[in-house]
Length: 207
Image (tube, rainbow, N blue to C red):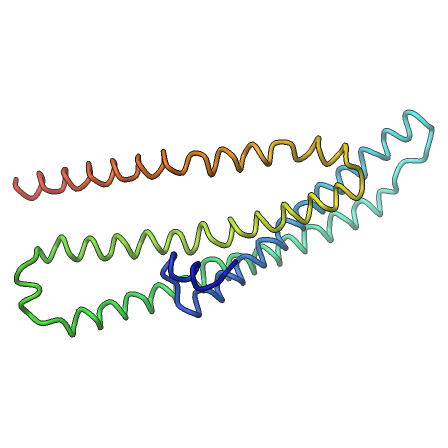
């Protein structure tokens, strides 16, 4: 999943790949903790339904309160770790990338810059770095974490009750189908927007 092809595709260093793995891991943990919080709601609702239909005793308030406190603590800790792994580590990666680019540009001959618009060159490079920073911090860890956590939750639900699994997860294939099916449309729209912005920048420079 995180091999050489993945590394080249997203222009990651070895440290960047390790950061992505950490972000993915903590995203999986966060998603599982959130599902644990939803399970508390299911437990309470099941207790109420049992009391109404079978006369079973209601679940103890101390147990429910203890589970809620545990959920709040786990949620805080895991979200904090996820934030550090998906944002904090990425900023160090971006700093390294920018310094590497600056060092490479410094070694280029002066004639290279004389044939090019320095403002356009700088804007292009920094724009590409900013886009990659967004992908590293906002997309990779969350996306691959969602894949893994969804698979884990699906397996658990299938073991528990296949009908409940279908009822809860029927929308997942639809969502993934829309996600992957709309990639070409999104790419065309992004390219169209990029050309439009480039045209607007040229007009502004002329004036």
